[in-house]
Image (cartoon, rainbow, N blue to C red; front, side, top):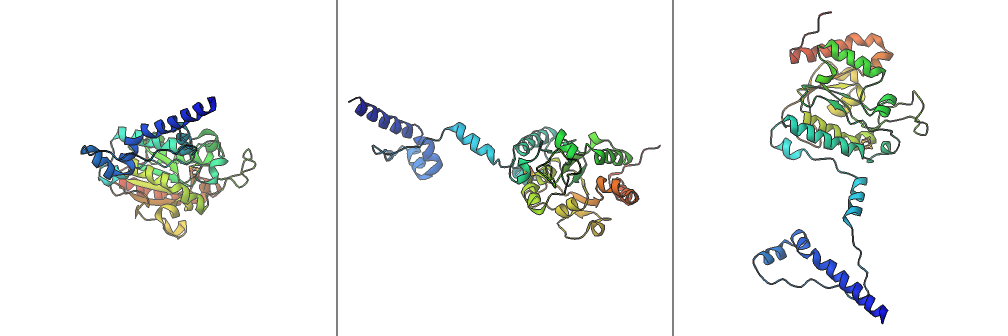
Length: 296
Ligand code: SF4
């Protein structure tokens, strides 16, 4: 007797749950039913749960947790499609939301070996953006781009252009540390460039950052970044020395952006003789932006 009552109560509870969300389900899943309801036509009763059948209830918190495993990047398509560059507040909010998405991202294997994701940082209204290939040892530990020895050289390159780090935006193609030996993340000299699959997974993020900041010029630092963004299989040597119109795969830029390629600061540390060529590239950008080198 007690079991019968419990069974009846359980069935009534299931039917109650089904009826609670009826209107919500109607408008989402069956617009013609929703229109009939809006016009005052009598609702057809929804099929009721037969006794003995199992009902699985998806609780919102469980759905949110599942969504957090594979978050989709925020979309800037609407804003960029409108042809308007975002204002400062919109850019700040969009970049912060995107950074949160990146910090939770596990779209490629680098997400399971990183210490910190490195979304990028800088002036949201920057006219100039630098894009490297991926975080290294120091960046992985600090969650900030270009903070190791190569970053110190990049700071000097930016200063030589008459700018400060706070006036530009700095990011990478891949947001998590690619390692040659991911089993030993504590090792120095464990950096590598992101591979094609990792770049394919991650490129949406840098494209959205470029569309949000919408700088006038992007400097691709190194061959990996240059080839990914200029979408040209040529070597860095062949790509250097000219500006290209930037075309992105996943978003429409609200205004034209041009890109130029130069050496990665880490390569300049290994080959100081290339610094004069990098300086020629940076002077081309300075001429476009009307910048003058500071007096010594
Ligand atoms: S590298 Fe990019 S795609 Fe891969 S886990 Fe990190 S943020 Fe996600």
